[in-house]
Length: 124
Image (tube, rainbow, N blue to C red; front, top):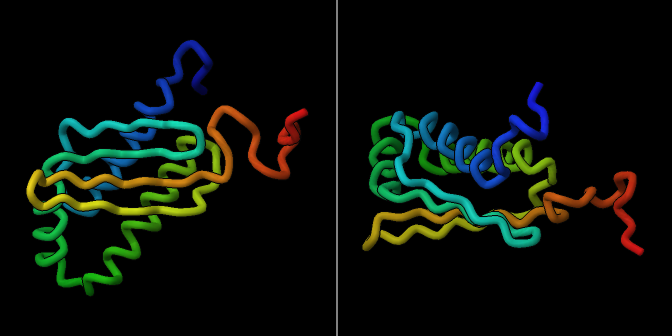
């Protein structure tokens, strides 16, 4: 079990989790992915991703909308596990000019504070 001394910083943990999800859906792990966490908003940038997701979707034989729903479900689960917070919203921004996808997740609380309804969630 990871201790406070061996645990990765949360942005790195989220980046690693999202890279794993991305690999599952595109068969290639992204390079240069990064994550920012500000309050209850998590922003993951995945360079070189717009074309790779579209290509993998076209070659999968799966319905594009079903594949996108599966990806969104896997991505929100990965972020939720990494931050120990519930994801209440997800926004995807794809920039075809720069070939960068930004996944923005809105959490129910900040990752360093207890979630609503959990012990210690009331701030005095």
